Length: 240
Image 1 (cartoon, rainbow, N blue to C red):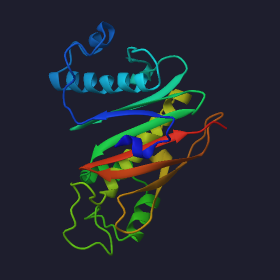
Image 2: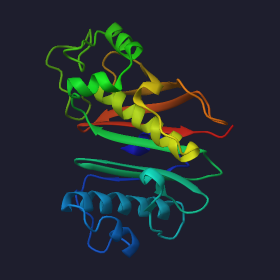
Image 3: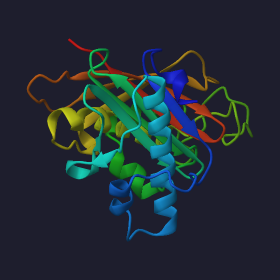
Image 4: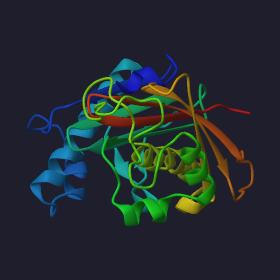
């Protein structure tokens, strides 16, 4: 699924399996989750199994994916990548650093955010734009022109825009942080979604950053997709 959002030079691997085979982790990886609950250990191993598949696609030998500052994945020299996991889905993407400057991906269940979270992660400008599509505060997955009862959770379902907004910001942050080693707050990225029709289940988005960092662009372009009960977003930041 994640490969539908990224250029062909990006190696993509994903899975709906909740557990990875025994022996998936390198000892140094296993130590990172030695005291974690089983659920965390399973998702940690499954997404690293995806990372190893992406390495193989690029013709690279398997390599441990350890954690740097703030938990950022440490990829093999000469590569950039990103990982994501949520209930029922794990994905990793990898590319040669000569092909792309940074990657950021995120997957979320295509379900509404709790109201207090929605207020915390969205800007007034974002809420106004979604309101212009007929997306109300009380029904953030509904829009004008969409038949009542249209499903949100199955393949081909409509987006819950609040959740998709959260995912898009996560993809922006994952793109930004490895390059700057500084964090972005949710109110420092203004997301605009673009779609071909009111019933679209995929499209693009633009993120305008409300702060700057040396050598970093202010505008980011990504893609979004809703399928199989998941809201997925991705950014491939080009050089230059």
